[in-house]
Amino acid sequence: MSDYRRCYQPGGTFFFTVVVHRRRPIFSNDAARAQLGTIIRNTQNELPFELVAICLLPDHLHAVWSLPVGDADYSTRWKKIKGNFTSEWLKSGHAESAITASRKKKGERGIWQRRFWEHTINDETDLEKHVDYIHYNPVKHGYVKRPWDWPFSSFRRFVAAQHYPKDWGRSEPSNISGMDLE
Image (cartoon, helix red, strand yellow):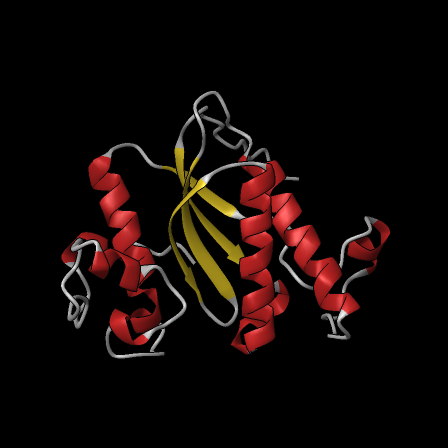
């Protein structure tokens, strides 16, 4: 077992990558995207956090969250999101991936990969780099030619707030080249 330690910084801002089990493209499905959005909003109501940026791709998602002052528990939020999505997805008749005996013994299901990847945002430059990475990701994966064309991200909200011009991201931003956060 890995000796990985998560960084829990109260009131911190964090970048996350969360991946579907065996990279199944379940978020190509409109119902899956809508269901996940509802579950994220419900979790925000129960355990507040600011969803700074997000991009939902067919088999994974990237997000930046800011937690309330004094609160560092992003793990419980992700556990709720992943668990509630799994329950609702299976209840609505959708299939899961085959799982190993080890996963079955631990009560896990074949919807999400076991863990998630997190990075503590250090400063404004680090935040900008990760938000750019999130919004450029559909282009990187070849789904669209520019971030504006991908409707399943917060990019359009950032354009409306004049953080980006509409045609931003036709080529890879220099501040994210070499980042591989998949």
